[in-house]
Amino acid sequence: MKILGIDIGGSAVKGAPVDTKTGRLLAERHRIATDRKLSPQEMAATIKQLAAHFNWTGPIGIGFPGVIHGPRITTSANLHKGFIGCDAVKLFAKATGCRVALVNDADAAGLAEVHFGAGRGITGTILLLTLGTGVGSALFCNGRLYQNSEMGHLPIRGKSAERFVSAAAKDRRKLSYKEWGKELRDYIGTLENILWPERIIIGGGVSKDYQKFFKHIKPRAKLVPAEFFNEAGIVGAALWAAEQD
Ligand code: BGC
Image 1 (spheres, rainbow, N blue to C red):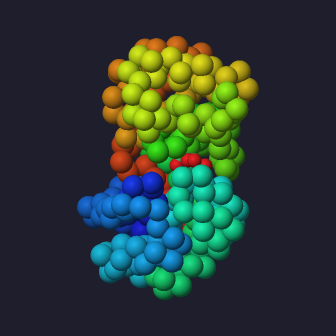
Image 2: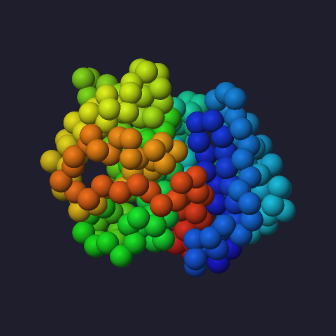
Image 3: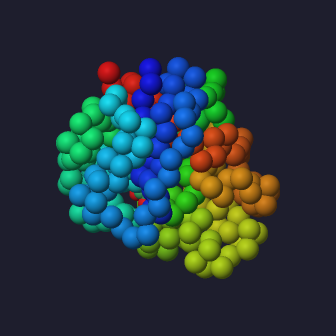
């Protein structure tokens, strides 16, 4: 199937048509930068612009950084608060005239990795963490996705873990890879004591520098970088839409 995959992020909205049989992009990824938090209406106009860029009329899968219940967004930790309670499927379908499916962005990235990347062929429990503006998670048990796992909001010192261990927190707190790696070691250690995954996959732009911080984490599970760098969210959102048929 050919599906337009879209990844809504903190600083940009990215998309490309995806062949859901192979996980390959069928055209070059298009990125629209967002210099501030867009309201749902403004986001709908941006999604429309992205679909128009590809002259798209087919199905669309969209990943959003928040808890998703059916067609609705339930939380929006780092994007516009107007998304909370918003029926985004209806809003984006109206803007584009296309069939839309909605999924959490980290769940989307996890689907891409489990089907075509660092988690393919692995049974048992897989935990994917995306380290970016926030911390996203995707949890799989024997190939099945446990939706909206939200491990980035595990409390550390009374606040969401993502305030300390996201890539944005590393920059904001001016941490070296070693200092940040040690914080990640404690955080991932806590997650391991609860979830006991076989494999942990680290995604997000910073995963390309994995050699600089993996050595400080020392987990029980096998720790691997994501195989998709910028494209996991796009590919996974398309896979999600294909599964909703
Ligand atoms: C959100 C998650 C999202 C993650 C990564 C968190 O703040 O609550 O839903 O997956 O950021 O974007």
